[in-house]
Length: 423
Length: 139
Image (cartoon, rainbow over all chains, first blue to last red; front, side):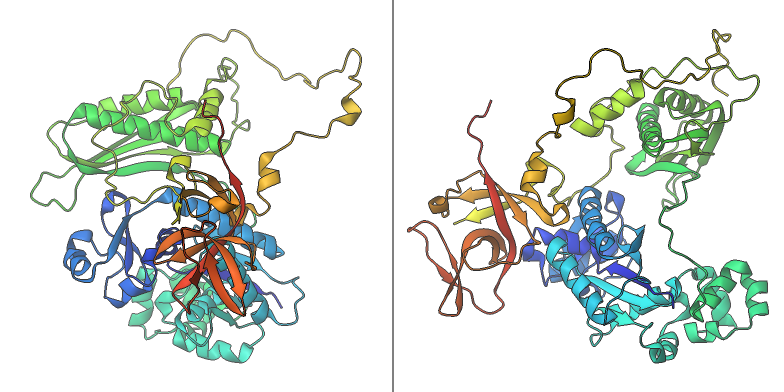
């Protein structure tokens, strides 16, 4: 039988914040989204105090003061590095793995010949905790969807000790399905949850027993696959190589509303730079670019506006000069005075592998690659992002992110490594 | 469309670009062994290895001084007499791990500092120090 495991880091961002700050152990910790907007991660202690996922910072301020909750700005340099370490431990232990997100990883344990899989998973858990300092939970199932469901229960149940194997204990599958609300099934979003609940389908068990024809009609083949996976039929294999991205985006919410044209211009130009860098890193080229700017939808008394524009490249490109020039033209076309702009973004669309760009009969063959982009990327890799830039934008604008409680980049910057006392 | 641009100057066609060897082979070619890599020498388990800056005087006896860079391998299971990073009162602290008559202790390597018995629960080993690195010339 197919054997999938889903390994999920427990409260990943909060666990990363604790790794080098042992004082935070056993204490409530929350991590905020970009610009310190709302809660995106909570330690168990913070959950117990009633801090909701997604709660805006201003709403929990009182709770924070009363219970001395530690509030952290999101530190993606740290989380990214720790995530790589966790994934590398998992990847070297299992025959095959698929990194599913920054804190989740699927393992294919089919060919793993071990006498007791639960013991093996406990050892893996222990090793990950010892090596990286990050606690994880492991769910094992005959399909990816069931492994995800098992993982959720492994995390919730104190008895499970962080591991639940439904492959070697098929008699538990029925109870596991009954215990899982349909909205917590992998791939069932909010819209589907409402629809299913209205029709009396409340648990994964109800859903697994829904008639195929009905599911197919209401939810298409995607929904039907989910139902089959709940019944133990493999529909989703491990994706060793994630499919190449079709679009890439660099967008930010500004710390405050910005009225100044120059400031917004600088922000969007630096997004253009960053987006170009991203597609170059992926070895891709973009066929088109889109720029959007919008005001703050929550500031209801202020005038609202959202503007966008796009351009198509004659020849797909990843050159910051091409992309920057395009974004600049779009910006000039769509800019409006008199609005407090709060968010902007640059999207690169129609991405393809570099070198495979279709060359049409009437194409103008570009000058050979002059190596400037490669040189810039090398400098920025060695000396830090933003060291070498085109003169497109000022370095420190108002639009930069608000990160008032940012922890040091403990593992990625020499000046920030933790210190240990000898006293 | 952003580049109407100039008329085509030349049409470039790909050519085979493998290098054709010419001249005499180096007599060293058969003896190249790759370069020495400090990472390889100092870091056995990259996923488990962390860098920490030491601060204070209590470990002078083993030659760890204020400002030294420590390499920590969390993949190493602590044994008696290892130099370790321990968590003491919420701080990362450098100590010598000792076991005396079945009792674990955290010892300083400097007679001005005390040796502490490890109680239950209030302290924990964070990782084992595998190397210390000191800069002898700042320029």
